[in-house]
Image (tube, rainbow, N blue to C red; front, side, top):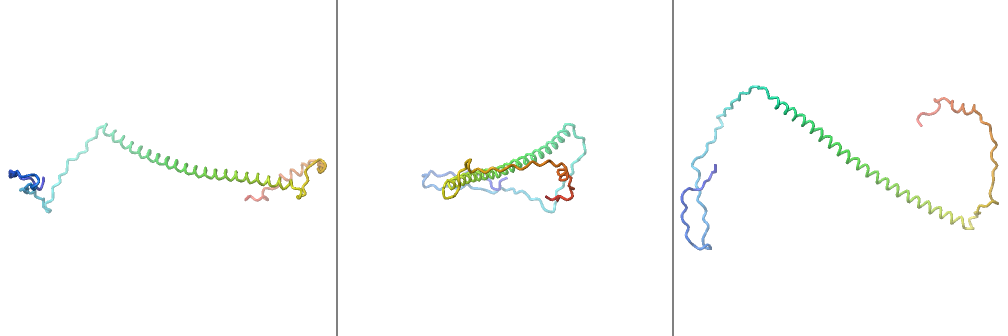
Length: 174
């Protein structure tokens, strides 16, 4: 209920003045005569207990309640599984990105080393071609031949003694 209501009395007629000189009038408002009474603090409201008797629930209602509980548990596990898979996916993508950056850095180093190796070979070849280094070009005349070592007979006992060493003498920590 509104605390202030408009008056039901007829409004006085407005004069027919020009719109520029007229002042807007505010509607007259009268207060509501009936005030609602607030309950006193000493009077406690009476609360009646409802007759709650344990009536058996219908089978369809029981099955719906079981279905609701089951779907709640299923939803919880699906959300947990989804979050786990999502976090695992994000983690593996971060790891892959880090390892890919390492691979690119190693490939860049490999290219730099290959370039440095080729430059060093070229410098050594240019130094070898200079006559002041004292190097001689290889030919049949300056080739040294070494005689092959004499054939020794295979000794089976020495091979067995090396294999039959006790295992306790070799260190296990290496």
